[in-house]
Image (tube, rainbow, N blue to C red):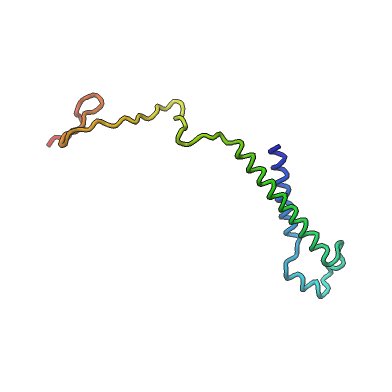
Length: 122
């Protein structure tokens, strides 16, 4: 069903682009008043403008509806997993949230093996 809605969505988008490119701008009405030849068209002087405007509006409505449909499908497909609750990647150790031992003032904390190799003599 999602693929069908996506195909209709793409067809509506391409149809809108084509119909918008076919339509005349507002400045084209002045040329039609002086006989630019649009009165002899298939739909008449104002018939083509009405037809193209209505077809564009209908395709825009179809595009809007398919956009909502595709949004509905994408929301239903999500996994509802939070970024905060994801597990670490396999093969990597999980981070340890153990605080490092604190040393009294003026002394350094012992290393993992118990030695004080990181101490700088004074």
